[in-house]
Amino acid sequence: MQIAVGARSDTGLVRQNNEDQYAVDLSLNLYVLCDGMGGQAAGEVASKLGVDTILEHCRQAAQDPALEVFGGAKSEFSEMTNRLASGIRLSNKAIHEAADKSPTTSGMGSTVVAARLNGNILSVAHVGDSRIYLFREGELRQLTQDHSLVMEQVRRGLISPEEAEQSELANVIMRALGAEPTVEVDLDEHWLNEGDQILLCSDGLTRMVPDAQIAPVLTEPYTAQQACERLVELANEHGGEDNVTVILVRLEADPPPAWWKKALHTVLGGDHQWQN
Amino acid sequence: MAKLILKFEAAVLKEIPLKKTSLSIGRSPGNDVVIDNLAVSGHHARLSIDEDHYVLEDMNSLNGTFLNNQRIRRSTLKDGDEIVIGKHSLVYREEGGIMPRDMVEATQPAQQRSMDSTMVLDTKQRREFLAKATSVSTGSTGELTGEATGVPGAGAKDRLGCLIVLDGKTDQREYILTSKLTVIGKSDMASVKLKGWFAPRVAAVINRREGGYTIAPSDKAGAAKVNSEVLSASRELKEGDMIQIGRVKMQFNFRE
Image 1 (tube, chains in turn red, blue):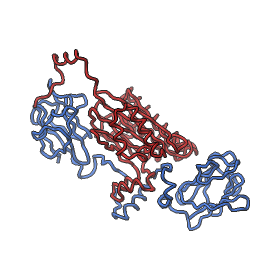
Image 2 (cartoon, helix red, strand yellow; image 1 turned 90 degrees about the vertical axis):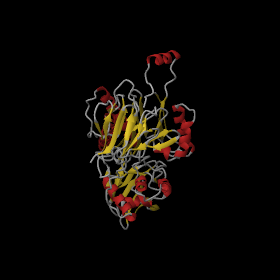
Image 3 (cartoon, rainbow over the protein chains, first blue to last red; image 1 turned 180 degrees about the vertical axis):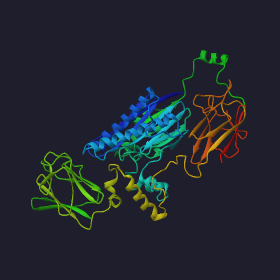
Image 4 (tube, each protein chain N blue to C red; image 1 turned 135 degrees about the horizontal axis):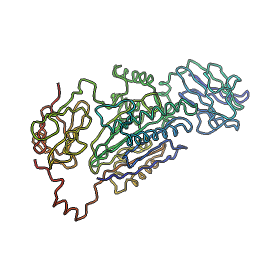
């Protein structure tokens, strides 16, 4: 199995600056996306600090596996998932402290979605209303639940998902990096198969382009990078009211082995069909 | 509702009702209150609600923000205060008190919110808002932490499952399924380790979800059977289900 990654970030058509920030680390199979908020340039500061802190923490941990897990490890999750959570809690602290230092950055914050692949196991962590989707067998499934007021109302059955999309309160989120001294990070793990695609995106995509129009892009014979560019284009075609950032991770089949490898495989055996 | 009265010398230019929790003042067109005068910085000052009053803040403007003839960085506003920015003045009037923050948000006109910058509720606001939002329709004031994904560990319905090995070679006789994801196979990632030459790398994966468990086949479907049926798609595990992989037989149970 091999991994193909594409990524694209765009200011959109309305905003002056891009407060989204992302990072892809191919050696760690780590993907992070932050959507900053706050007046002036503070949103950019927050999202950059968020991405950088998470990346640095995971890189350090790769060198030194004994590195402390900030905020404590949860036993039901793997080391890798706990590491992701640790990095996010650190980034929350960093943003919160930086916000307090200067009046221009006071009140700044950021969302985060982060994913990491360890073989077939995908670790997922998030805070805020950026999203991670799994595209499997033609179906787009949201792996994260927005920490937004309207989605909370939907979960409580107070309003319908359609009403949520129209709601005036769509921009109110319940959790963000930097908002408070500590943050609760939602974690999850999924087993991925060959052919699966993982999409990380900021709300600039999902509030402009309905899921039903995202899915077809992922089935087109685009490369991962072309698919990302097409998604950004779609967001802008729909108005481009916000910054839009997407990262697409594809689990692709290995290229077919050379004939002599096949022959060798047949002779020496290997991954045989397991007899029941 | 509180308001600002924008004046130039003695002339009243307009009245601005304070409908938002935060309001920017400056020369750039993106501001809530635009004052088109060269003495005014692009983003000059900001008004925001703190608890139950508005706070005026200078945004590092070049020519400063003055409150009752004193240059300020940040100051609380009270009824009748006069803010001077360049040659313009803004009189702050608090009539009938300012609106609580959540009400302000809820009554914001639609065109203002559409893609307005995102805002976060802090814990206290979150509790208050949700209590209000939920009490109306459901009368519940219970858990209001915004917890959503059902992290296992708490609640009566989060029963722990376990696998008991009845036959075949594995590294343990019993596995308690505390993890979110349990991999069965020969792979390094597997926590239920199968032994033997021809054991599949990954035969199946068990997911722990909201108090229950589901089992799904790996890439190479057909390696696992549940109750003698070949596992071809994800299915829920029920008390007593028999999982068979090659010669390994395991029974799924919930722990008492």
